[in-house]
Length: 500
Image 1 (spheres, helix red, strand yellow):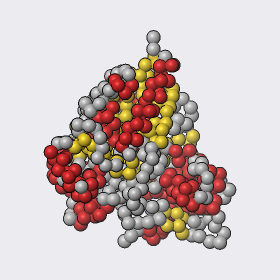
Image 2 (cartoon, rainbow, N blue to C red):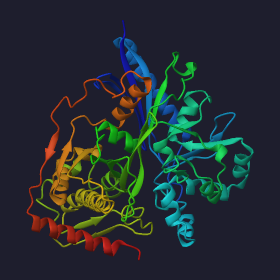
Image 3 (cartoon, one colour):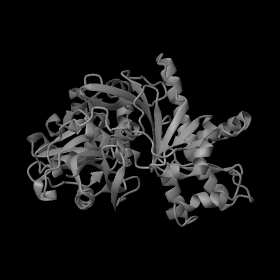
Image 4 (cartoon, one colour):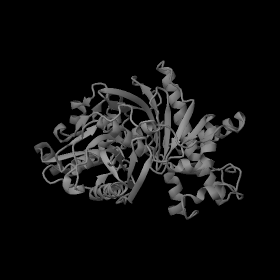
């Protein structure tokens, strides 16, 4: 008799991964395939939707082959995805009509600036919990339709539909039978009212987007249909869809009010679970949906960093200081500190809490004694400084909303969290305990656990969950006066970076 297992598909920004895990949360097999990004103009970031889909199919087929050989039966599939990235495709054929416009893309920045000047900022935040920024899907769609009015016309006629990556994959995987998304992804479009839990007609009209082209919004753990049997030669039920950062929050077991995680990836994303409360931020953080299960919604407060691990990639690919991303730790470890060098990685502007799309990167504090090692160290430290800004803002916002929520410790995951130098500096500069699980695939595991819930196997998710191996933990070591001095140097560098 075959043993039950579940598949999680993590369709990320630069790669697609599928993992097979048992019902206890033990990973049995992982398959990966890269996804190429394209930069047709300064600030533009695109991907090929067909490549996103083919990478997903490849990875799912690979884990299914492993399951078959190992005596496992996949009972369901959960999908987690890069969020605000938007795709438009033909309703009849499923063929995309333009490249995927990636969440990092800044092409709609001017549209966002015009909306701010028109006084829409507070109204949009009040409905969606989002600040006006090119980051989110609606302005990307408006940019596209303004430049290609024939697409807007076809959308209003009903021949085109759109969605974030989860809904595109669900549509393609089910052979065009299901056009749906979940509340976490819908809440990142700037079209979804997180109070009424529905698309907002005023916002749809503002951005010129017909509601009929948008996917239906379902629970995070829910029935998303069955994969086309021609794809995998067996019935695979899709039972969860969730944005990647919310999936990581769930996968890190941050299910209690006040628990927080930060994913250190291409960007950095910190979320704190605020339970049934929608927090109004005075620091321009984002109020959003953590997940919806059984019709009950948990909310979160989020701060995002546009350039986290991407700064390490810049050292590797742009400057050639290091040959591999991992090498930054070896080089940085040769010096005790950054030697007074401060780096602000505002390559595509600054996100929370500054939201300055015109800010640009800065390196200050250089002397003749500065070496590549000091710059490497400053790049790692810049990631921690940005996350610390968000920790402080979250604590202030929760206190202002009379919520007993504070970030006392932080769970960390993502590729850059493998750096002991970065994690120790994060603990030092934030005066917090940092907990890094040995298992790195927390985003995918969150989707797998939600798929188990959606299938009805266990309403709590994994059976007998818990860390199989003791996590890495980092406690503050630096003196408080020294930490304060470093934070002040960071603040001064930020002031020089801002456009106004």
